[in-house]
Image (cartoon, rainbow, N blue to C red; front, top):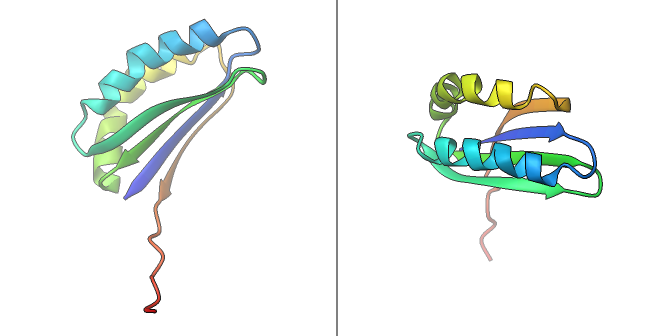
Length: 97
């Protein structure tokens, strides 16, 4: 599994602008093949927002990026400190009792 983390800052008092981005992007991401879960996150006091996506595979995440990036990047044009990263999820080995 992989997690795509999109973080951006719109400044304080911009929650409605962040929600407008989420309303447009999150449903589009959830429709992509291999998307297990997609959530919008917010720290309104700091003006920080983001989208967290759990993907079945790196291939699914990469394929979706080709579809989502042309929608996402213009939506984030006014954001400060934008970060888009992909992380591999490590499943810890469970010890036998």
